[in-house]
Image (cartoon, rainbow, N blue to C red; front, side, top):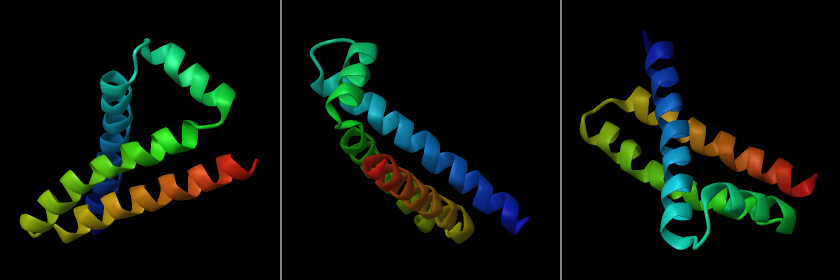
Length: 93
């Protein structure tokens, strides 16, 4: 049960990160999603966009803490760390 709660929190964290990226691009980009992400890859700032999307993880993290679902919150935190490690690896490759 504990592993399932952590996994659910992890998936929630990844989904929140994706939603944060989509929200950021849709608000601050003057061109479409595809063109923005292609430009980000070409100019090397995709990691920054993904990191800004990770800020959106605060919402489910604190909701889970408020509901005393600590293992779900732990999963969101693990997703955030996994995204940070992924961005660091992407930046140095």
